[in-house]
Image 1 (spheres, one colour):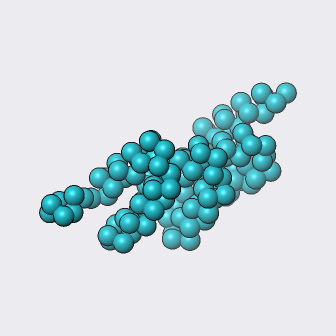
Image 2: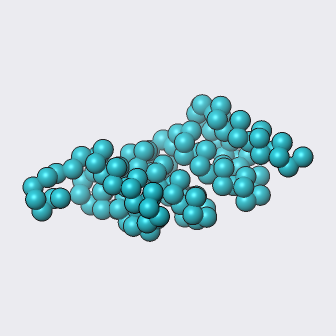
Image 3: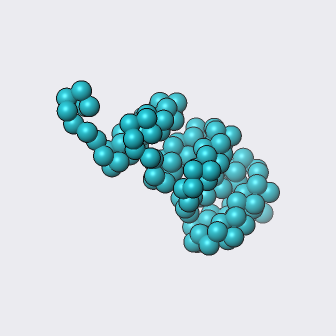
Length: 128
């Protein structure tokens, strides 16, 4: 693409990233975040959420949490989607204390959390 003179913008990069995740190329998606930065595009929360979700769906919670930490270090504010992806996989893997910690973090950071509360309530109801 670049060799042909086309200089993609953040939307194009995010679309490519989403495609990589959709077809299961999780490792390439993670590397692609670095490529974006190397080319002068700071991945936004949409790009990071795409990869966090992909990692979570592929059972790579530790990697997703590492990326989550890097997002916060960079000064990018995680949103309800970021937290929802992580909380979902934590609940599904029995990590309720960690999921609760993230819910509390959301409250502390004034992040709207309606969808997380609904998911958490449904998860608890299934366990009874």
